[in-house]
Length: 150
Image 1 (spheres, rainbow, N blue to C red):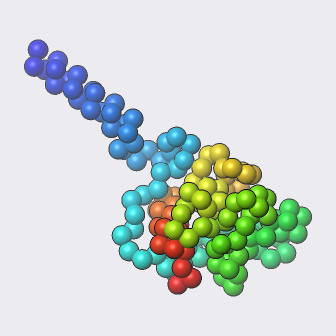
Image 2 (cartoon, rainbow, N blue to C red):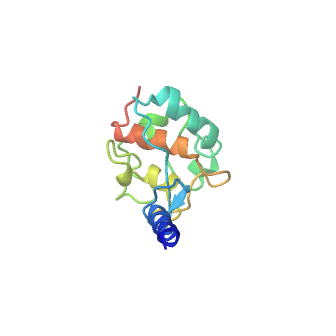
């Protein structure tokens, strides 16, 4: 009887842990689960811009079809990215802000890279692998820290 009870309790604990998301399974409830907070100040130049350079600038750059044909004003190259997204309204949905300092859940950029069902358009990056949990954590922490241009 003791073994049965121990096994049953283990099963219940495991089921609860999975239900509560205590295991980092990468995707729960339609949103990618980022890694735990970095615990340090995130640098835009050293942490965020390299993500944009690797994952975003093939489409989000001046003169790209994304800008010229689709009319999406977000330019994520070194010289324009911060001013292009922080506090700027979306050209797709003017009621949404691309990056709302201090609030990732009100930031369309965050929703586009972290959600399986963003409020407008497709999950980004459109042509490529989703951002890793580390990249998501850096982006979320940067927004939470006020989206500084540091």
